[in-house]
Structure formats: C-alpha cells, structure tokens
Image (cartoon, rainbow, N blue to C red; front, side, top):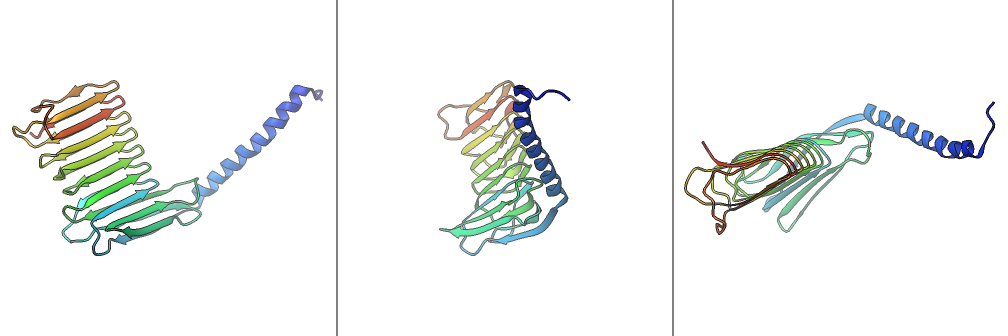
Length: 239
C-alpha cells in the first residue's frame, strides 16, 4: 500500500469530487437524451399584428410569404425530460413567440415554417440551425448561431442576416436599400436585379476574397454591408 503523502491527499481531495461531478453530468446527459420528447407547435398572429418575432433555442426555420392577411407558425418542437417553455405575447402590434427548453442537456429545437402576409416585418432568431426565406417583401431580420441562411425571391428593401459560421445567400427581385449581413466564417453571396442602379458596397473578410461586379457609387443610398470572418464575399447582378 502506497504511503499517503501530502501530494496524494491533495490529488484525492481534488480528483474524487471532480470525478463524481463528471460522472453525474455524463449520466444526466444520457438520461436527457433518452428522455427526448416532441410536441406540435402552432401559433396564429391575432388581427392587428403588424410585426412578428420568433426566438428559439435551436432548429431550422422556413420563412415564406402567404396569401392571407395574418401570420402563422407551425412546426414540431423537440425537448428533453420537461416540456419547453413557450411564450406568446402581442404588444403595440408586434407579436412575439419564444421557445426555450427547461433542461439544458439534450435536444432543444423547433423546426417550423413561418408564413407571413406581404409587407409584414419579421424577425427570426435560432440558437443553431439553418434558415430559409422565400418571396418575402417586408423588412426581415434572420439570425442563427451557426447554420446557413438562404433567401430567394426577396422583394424587401431592408434585410439583415447573421450566422455564427454558415454561408449566407440572398437573391433580391427588387433593389434593396439597406442590407446588413455577417458570418463568422462562411461565404456570402448577394444577388441584386440586373440594371444600372448603383450601390454603395462595404465588404470585409478575414481571409477570403471580395468580388463585386455591379455599378458602384459611395454616395448611393442603396447600401450593402457584408462581413465574413474568413469566407468569400460576392455581390453580383442576376444572370
């Protein structure tokens, strides 16, 4: 039997509690994954809503233009052990929906489709997942902790998009007035309508290249700001 020296006593005093904590955390994570659950999520913006905001801990979100006069969200939420905390509120014409999990371990996602009428302002934020938009015409703000952002058929004049590391691609059908996009390391592609309209482009990347073969004018009111931590940035006209 080895003698109990001061060094060994210190090692035991630190190591044993640490091992117990690590074991407990590993066990809790395993239980959380086994205790996975799913619930349907459905929300309709009340009459009078002019803006809609959706915030979720994770998951993929599709934003699309609908034919009606109200916004609606439909999807499936995933959680661990305890049902998620879902908040719904409307203040001064702005409807907000939040999806947050009570248990920090295990899956926590909301995969959903948000349908909005023409011209409605929209803000969508997810802690991690892909975001897609199609045919929207109101001001939009899209943010994800790490997925890709892809928007097509965009008629909105004001757009912001942010991702922690994925790619961003936005295709406009009308001339945008204010575009703000950034990614922690992915590629950025902005496609504007073909024509003689000039743009003020401010682009910067930590390691990629910048390609902007469009009419440029630093005094133009049509501003495009694009920032990447290391990817390529392309601003071009539609083919």
